[in-house]
Every structure is written in C-alpha cells, then in structure tokens.
Image (cartoon, rainbow, N blue to C red):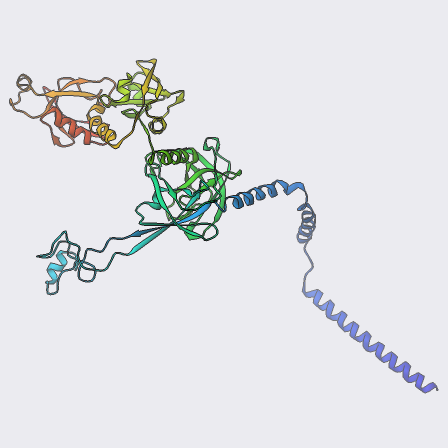
Length: 519
C-alpha cells in the first residue's frame, strides 16, 4: 500500500521538478532576452505619454475649425463636380506639301558638296518644273490634340474656358463628370483677355455660380478644379498670393489673380473658386521654368471673364471702349521735367487721334489723366483696362491735371475697332514725339549751307511737355529717323510711326550734326 504512494510521490515530485526546470529554463531565456533588448528610454516614455494625451485631444474642439475647413473643401468639390468639364481640342494639320518621303528632298546623284551647301538632303525650293502653289504628294499632316478644362455657366450648355484651349481647333470634344461626351461649338472668343465661350447641345446641366472677384483678397483660401495632365476632376487648394497682377505679358489686358494653388498644363480654362463655391477666376497660365507647378499660377478675374461672357452672348464679340490716345506712365523723371512733385500719379497723354473721342472732349497732349468717373488711374495698363470696360455712346468724366490745375472733362466713348487702333498707331508715332515738322525751304537750306534740294525736315514746333522737349529746338533739321533718310513731313511721320520705344534722330543745326535718342 505504501509503495504505490511512494511511486506517486516520486513521479509527482519529478513532474514538479521538470515543470520547475522548464519554468526556470523559460525564466532564464526570458532573462537572457531582456538583457539583450534595452527598455524604453526616458525620451520614448515621455513621447508615449504625450501621444496618449494627444490621442484623447484629437476628438475635442481643438480641431473643430480644421474639420470645418476640410468640410468646406469637400463641399466645394462636390458642388462643382457636375459643372467642371474637360475639353479636348483636335487640330487637323494640313497635308504635308513635300515629296520624297514627306520632305522636299534633293534628288539622288547630287554631289556631297552641294548637299552640304543646302544643309543636308532637304531642298527649300520647288524642283524644276514643279508648281510651287500646287499641293504636293506626301504623307498627310498629323492630327494633334490638346487638353484643357472649362466650367459650365448655364443649364443649357454654355461653357467658359480659355481662348488658347480652343484656338485653331477643328473639333472640340467636351467630357462631363459622368463621362458623357459632346461636340462643342465656339460661340465667341476674345484673345485679348484669353477667354472663349463654347456651347454644347445639352439640357438640365448644373452651372457654377459666378462670384465677385472684386471682393477677393490676398490670403483668401481658393480651390482650383480641372484636368491637369488629363487627370479629370483634380482638386487643388491654396491661397490668393496677389491681385491685379499687371504687365505679366500673357494678354493685352493683364489683370490677374495670382495663386499658389497647384495649376498645371490641362488646368487652363478651369475655375478658381472661393470657399463658397463661387467662380472668382478662370485659370489661365503658370510661371514655370520647367512647364510644371512652381506655386505661381494666374487666373482671369471672374468680373473680367463674366463681362466678356455677357458681351459675347449679346453681341457675338467683346465690345470695348475707345478714346483715341497714346499714353505713358508718370515717372519721377517725367514729373520732374514737368515741374510737378515726384509723387504725382496718373497717366500722361503723349498724343491724340485727330477727331477721336478724347480730342473731341478737350483732352490735350501733355495732360495727365488722374481719374475716370471717380476711379483712380495710376498706370497706363489700368487706363487701358478701364477704358475698355466703358460702354460706347456713354459719356465719362475725366479728371485731368493740366498746368498744375485740375480740369474735369466729359468724353463720349466710342467702340474700339482694329481700324481705329491701327489709325492711332500710324498717327501716334510722330505725334508722340511732340514735334511738328515742315519741308526744308530754299531759304533754310541756304542758311544751313545745304543744297536747294537737300533732304530732311525742319522742326517747326516742339511741345515743351513732350518726349523730345529737352532734345530738339525749333529750326533744327531732322535728316534721319532710325537710320531712314527723311525728305518730307509725310516720310517723317511714316518713319516715326514705325518706331517702337526708343527713337534715333540724326539732327543738324547751323554748326554741327548730332544723334538724338528720344525714349
């Protein structure tokens, strides 16, 4: 009876020892491992404690405002999704007017020396017996396509975009947010501000709201939506970096909203939006050395774009005002020449179109326009933009500084046309110099020791407020304008009208000849 009990006790003790050994073994392994892996540092422990507190804080009101901003971005994106479209413009290249495999090449057997003379195998002139005007055989020109964006502005399918997106296209395809495709027709364009209006045959569309860009301020959040690199419905955000960016060199009437929202090729024509989901600009260009996003994008203000839109819908074109002036900025140097304070602002009238609106209204060369209808005029570009917005047939009030005194004049605006602009360009060059000339009489030729039929013109009058005021005197003879010999007043006007910017005059007086540079 005692023996089995002893066996049990032994086996029990053995198992206990084995278990104990195992535990010790595991414990030893654990201790061994612990000695190899260091425990958390003081810094890590502090970070863990902070993380626990911060995880709790993530759910409180500390991030409520950020959540609201994210919600605004989401809502704008959802609101505008049906209104933003992608535009594919297909340009059909003309048949390649070339022979011998697509290029007009020299025929076989031409000596290498002659080939080298022509710069290779391509021959730049028609072959003997070849009709230069006839279409030549060769491969057809390739089709090219460009991708841009646009925004629907009416339920029945009018779309606002950039002129450069659609310019030269033989076919325009508009893709909606649900992938429906429509062929679009051009209703009207305005290259001077890079705006185009398209129309697709669709109904029940969701248009975007056009906002007031005059209320946009530097620092405001903005959202851009478009198809950069063909990626439809891409949403980016940023702030307004600047307003009224002038002299950027993009359009004839530069007046842009600058933004750091990511704008890339393909965004052109798409909307720039405020957090209320209103269009405040039409994305147009980027400043980039590599062609991609550099944080400097430009958008046409919605007020400018909307004026063009309404004019195109009403008139089929953009109607602009015209007053018939050639102008220059008021610089400190010019103000000093005129005996005015260097701080004088306004736009200097260099010349007027004869019989033009400004001349009829009493404006004179040398006047300084300081405001129009109460709107301050601080630069030539602002004057051009402001006059362009004036309605033809209406009278505008011009506040002018003349001889140190303020004068108010009424000028009736006319419609700007290419013919009037060309006329102003032709007449303005000579008048902008501020001088009048007359032919050389035999008496004057004798006084200067010239032949009776000597070339040149005599300076009759010099406007003391003109560009040439400090360089010329009445009675002097102008022999050349920018290297062109002058023999009559008409030739002088023609040569001067072609001069852009700096004008070089070869001038002679009773004692010597000199070169006069008029800037």
